[in-house]
Length: 106
Figure 1 (spheres, rainbow, N blue to C red):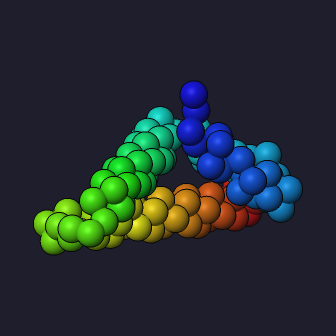
Figure 2: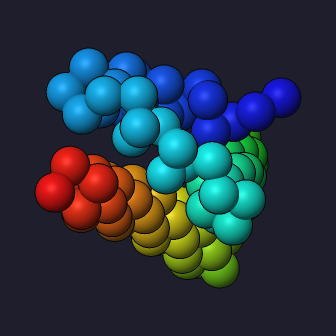
């Protein structure tokens, strides 16, 4: 399963419409592709772990476990850090693509 196609397809369609089909070639590098796949996998794993921890906390409702709550907060923070890294990676790839298209057209 190619996770980058699932996440990046709308962005790629918009870029292909505005910049042309040459823009898609920027996303074919294996390092960038591996980065986006691992970021998506990490984001999903942190989300699953967060949901499991929240379910454990809800099932033991009258009791409150501070350690479990702290771990859940850290997992949530890591999930958002990975999300922001994914967004930053997409923005960097867009900027690199726009610069390469400008050089290509010149």
